[in-house]
Amino acid sequence: MKQPFRVSSDETHGVSMQAVAVHSRKDWRAFYQIEKDVYRECPQHRSTEHDLLHSLVEGPTSFHEHAVVLPHILTEGGVTVGRFALIRDSLLPDYIQMAFFEALPGLRQVSDTVLEACGRSNHRSKKCVVGLNGHLNYGAGILLNHFHEVPPYGLPYSPPYYQEYFKDFEKRLLVTFHYPMQPFYAYYKEMRLKIREGRMTVRPMNKLRFRRDIGLYTWLNNACFQDHPYWADRTAEEDYELFHSFRHFMKAENLLFAEMKGRPVGFVLWLPDFHQSIGPESKLRFGNALKSRLTHRITACRFCEIAVLPQHRRSLAAQLLIHRMLAYNERLHFTEGEGGFIFEENSASMELTQGLLKRAFGKPFEPYRRYAVFEHVL
Image (cartoon, rainbow, N blue to C red; front, side, top):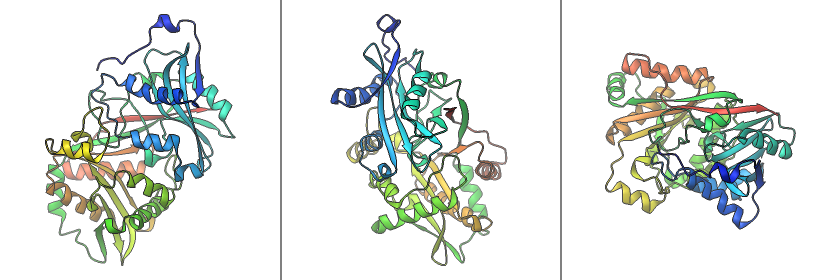
């Protein structure tokens, strides 16, 4: 990978780094421009999160009803060399988040400057966390490996040197699993007689009742992830705003619900890898994606999230959801998939994922893509 543009050391020698709060139009231009400078010659990067970034940083959204977002640029000698946004969320009070970080290589005072900014803005938070972008549903993680590849849609890309800027912080690891799809298809065809629907059924999202079904998704998330690292309860409106931004790309089968006597007990969310259909500078807009998909068939999918209510985790809910998801995956001729992210400390999710992979492939699977969220005590 070619190195991004870098201000020469002569221009910044002896000049201390500063974190400057964004106020003016010039500051906003610099805030967005630095991402272009970092990834100027990086074909692995995708700009599909630009609209989400814009809405969360500038607002207003439902997220801003309980969170304060303070965008900053990093400067050396008046030259912009990085950016981040400090987020104070009343629903995650122990942390002040240093989100949406981007910076040029070769900088010396990044972590100290960030911690100083956290100190000035902190309201009783115990830790600074780097790599959590407002909420887990919006994305998390600084990439640690596989820098030569384009990550699947919904997983971030970042340059190798980012982890060096926070090497003195505590590291919490996240992983994904990458696999060919054909053994999964074969395994679940063998299992289909054992996991037939009965009292428990699976249905796709009803796009005509999009807001209602996103509300069910939110309710299940809040019920299932109370003990998950960095979890903060969501409102249905927050998730509706998130999914509404790319509703034209979602099909009904991308969000499946398991129901017992008509009541939701779990869900699975999966998506085609839209990154295969657009280039480095393209945003996830309907026209861009449609044009690209006419000439580039998507061959991979991402298994984003599965959740089952605690009282139903010994039932067939998870198996039924995965079985139905795989039927759609095979119909679309996906040849490879990637699951996660999963926090390594989340033993239940790690065991579930590794168990499914071992049963389908007959061998243990090692994590593929690795990410980290960095913490520092304030």
